[in-house]
Image 1 (cartoon, rainbow, N blue to C red):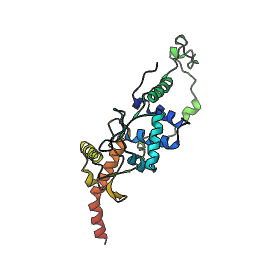
Image 2: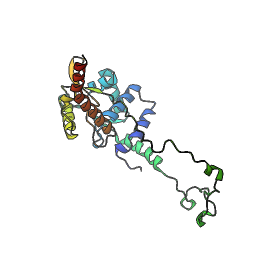
Image 3: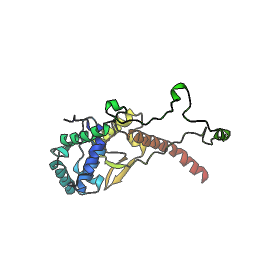
Image 4: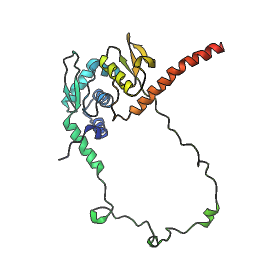
Length: 253
């Protein structure tokens, strides 16, 4: 029997199987993808987004989200523990059956074919000549090629720096006290200024809130944590450069 792996180790296989489930509606797939990629905690394997939060992020109605959640639960993609609506949101967790299925796929992809026939592997073609073990060469030298000595223009060039992708932002209302508090603590732990000093305040639907990289701060295993740290570092530089830009504009006028 396949051993159940932690969800963070089979997350890719889980999403692949989800996308290939022809019996699942597009709305259910969209909701599952959003929960797993945005809210799921890598250690507890749980998420607590409200129906309204999911609806705002996916552009669907709350009733559509409710139907999609029931579908994901009935088809054993999620184990859903519903909250009482008063400070306790519904809890979502990938079902044990779906994680075991993803673990089976991961186990198959992890199998490596051995190189030696005695161990059940394939026969490797010979890659060296008989002289290799005696200090010989694999192929004779190309004297004509050795006469060409052109400098490589790439030698000594600075390393190429890959540009970071733009971080998509989501709206977190100021009334979401738990989320705002966790973001404030995360910024403090990263040595960042207070949330209010980063000029991220905005309005949406008549509500005041903040434009942030996610509804919840990332944990240490989240691969997007570096991108989010870079985003806030850029905001710090942008805010710090604000007075200097205003001074230059006054001088120019």
